[in-house]
Length: 209
Image (cartoon, rainbow, N blue to C red):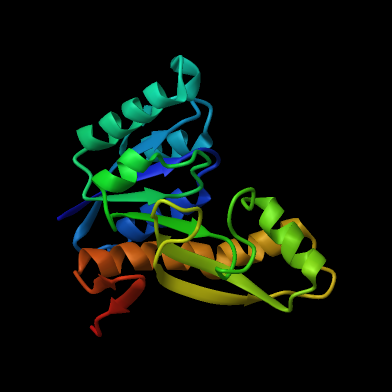
């Protein structure tokens, strides 16, 4: 059984999508073992409690330096026995020591079609603001493995979503969540749990069912 630890910072809508998929029996071979947040006020923690999933808070405010916070975060993730770490709206930079400890075992969901509208400073509504400013007709979401860069790891899954006339960053964000993010993240976990995802250099290969 693949033990999955989910890292969150806010409302936890992507976490809820994963929890719902597990409850529906759609994550065969995977189990959500724990939820960790850097924010003690994150509503995602309430979602975890409602689902009966253990949770913990590791806040940078509790540590004198960023290095101490990074060590504490890695230690807590290791305590959960994680086989796979899922970033579901986690707004802290993942430290190099965690990437090294979990090579190709950390995945992230990003609200655009990477390599468009990604990288440092591109998160949340900022992504959709940039997409609308550029006038794109299609956006979407990407699930990728996390490496030492920002949104540069091997891409696992992508899904395109149409941009509508009159969209605001908020309406586009919601559509991409509903049509792409909430589908892609559980699907990626399921594929990894089934042993169907293989990384060759910077390319991901997915075996047929």
